[in-house]
Length: 307
Ligand code: MG
Image (cartoon, rainbow, N blue to C red):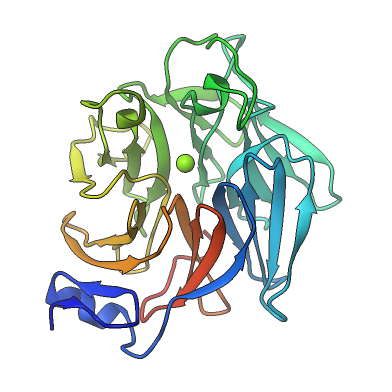
């Protein structure tokens, strides 16, 4: 069974994809009204999803119990990517604040990183927390290139790196060979770190791929060869499922790559997709941020708890 499954949004490019979805399940559009949807994160205990509407300077909240959507925080400092740490706290990348922050259990906000060696970060884009508590984030320049989703400014660092903040608060460069580092995610056993490079946004010959780094026991990364190149648009944010597949944003929807980097299937979405995350009590519901709208689809695979 190859090709598009009529009316579902699923497209099978390799038989391996057939086990990943249920044939009669449909993509659902849950809500619309955003300008640029990004950064979905699932809170299992509260049964809600948060995501960013970056240009509208707000964080939105989808309540799984009744399907309602409300404003969680406004202004949001133009947050982009979010994740949840091992204590269940929201960790956010802020374009306007040019920093990564954590929302504590009492609602106060703690700065995790806002500079490297005294120079302000560009505009943190996406973030993940490793099981040891270290916080890894990308710092491309999208939020300082224009006023639309942040504030125009010169880069103080003059480059776009990937950073790691250790549990004791020390920040270091984890990778310095990226043009525009963007989405990132660990493999299920955290032995691999996948990082997208969206350099093609400002250079037609620039990268539009995901690289795969081996993570050594001391937390350093290897050179990270190219893992997969996007065939439609670019890979922005993505998540890894329990079996090691990558579910990535792309121009025509969500691309599913197997652990070898092969594109095995797609979930077509009628808008450009920027990011995804697994949610629901069983982490078998993929939430999809597609430009103006929030979509979801139930899959026959499960995400990795808690991220
Ligand atoms: Mg991104």
